[in-house]
Image 1: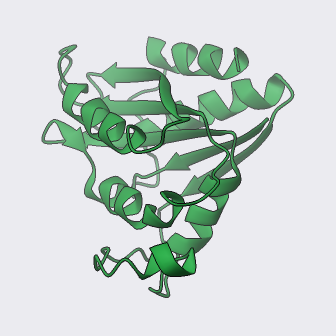
Image 2: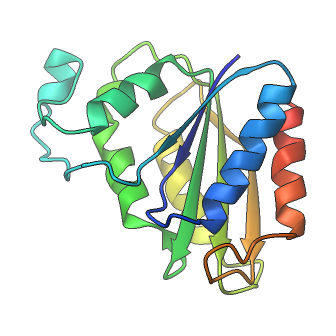
Length: 177
């Protein structure tokens, strides 16, 4: 399978990206083709709501989003990694999801979507709104489903996730693809 892993954190030593990398490692070890894309350093503007993408099959905004969206289109599996900001996915992830609007009318390949989240707060309730936001996007794609998610709580400082049990969960999830 063609697996696309999208890290949405802008941190250089990102806790959520560490989860993404472990998922990618597990998937690669299981023989899948894996690409990890980071939004760090990418220019992604807000969707204008012009719907030109429905006529053209691609976005008219000239930035880094169309290239990522094309990769999303061709992937069998997409995994998103995000830090939790105020009990929700980070803004750059939401912006990318909005900019993925050209996929709506397309013959996209993806069926399984995964989500990896990290936050300072430890409560099990912490990722619920972020997961709900992603499932709202997934619900617009009839062949797609949320296939799994992993949350690492109690991690705030860069790299604090080292040794966290969620890293093993992410790796095992990738291995099972």
